[in-house]
Image (cartoon, rainbow, N blue to C red; front, side):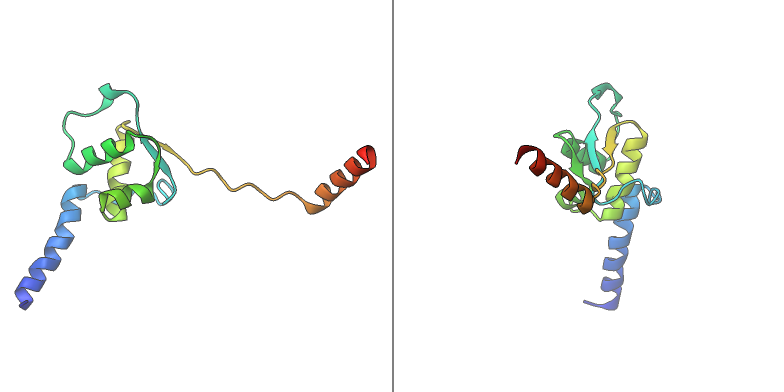
Amino acid sequence: MTDDEHNESEAAELVRPYVITRGRDLPQEDRFSLITLVTAASDQRQRPNRLSPEEQQLLELCSGGYLSVAEIAGHTQLPLGVVKILLSSLADGGHLITRAPIPRAQLADVQILQEVLDGLQARFG
């Protein structure tokens, strides 16, 4: 491969994501984490008439139920940043519903659990 062919190949790899996202920037960092859950809105009338093939693919994929952003990127084989930009655009248009991941539960205090266990043993033998 000559240098010109190599440079054209690199340029094509950079241009395609720019074209897919229409030059839009990444959404706020906390809006879409890898484990944010996404599904298509149930109201079909809100869907726009004109979507890019990638946006249509995302909506079809998300219409089956909740998927994480990481799963969507894996299924579409698009770069994660591109997926986040497209999801953000679709969510802003009211076409997607997002749900933040459920926060991890705090562990119970061992001392309190021991006191409850001692109380139950004293009461019921």
